[in-house]
Image 1 (cartoon, rainbow, N blue to C red):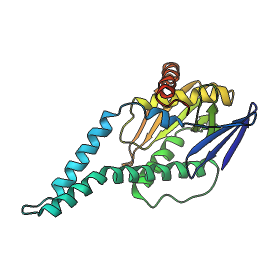
Image 2 (cartoon, rainbow, N blue to C red):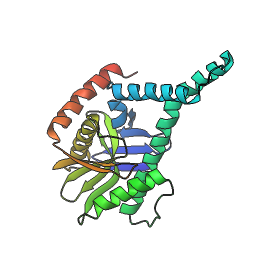
Image 3 (cartoon, helix red, strand yellow):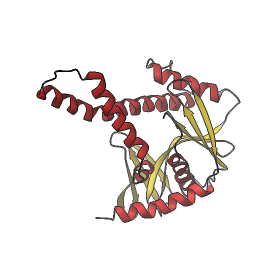
Image 4 (cartoon, helix red, strand yellow):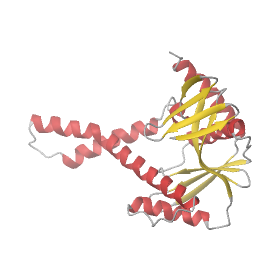
Length: 236
């Protein structure tokens, strides 16, 4: 369990269940994570990828003369293929984030054995060592009680730059909203106003991509998205 106390609130994060709870004046409530809030957005690219993954699995494994039972089995396998691939990607991303957290905390670690995670970590080290970097916070949980959400911030540099690391294949527009959410929470929870946002994509192929983000519009947009989330998920 990770526990933080701020302004009369107690924020608890359970890494096993990825659950955030907030306690204040004897009242406890479960808060959605930033990524949970963002899940209300349509992601057509993900749907297209899932369909392509299923189709490719069928093309790779179909052969003329398959029986009806074999075809049914193949279709069942194809349906689970996107979830399996997605989980592998998530596991690699978690491994990279854990390695970076240990590095920033001064815990010595060898490079990951997983080749994709290793290339992403090498990309991080390339970015990190380009210039001397000091930081205020790393892998810190934060919350915004008035808006009602919580999340974990990857990194806040000494100059106020808010950094979010990604191991995805691209930098998608919703990532800017994620930075906006963290910026709002940092202002309320830590009294830190980020000066700018930075998306750092650590490709599993070793490709490094850095995108600077003006945080004002993402902050406003995420506030409105919280209204949508609350409308779709009213308190029980």
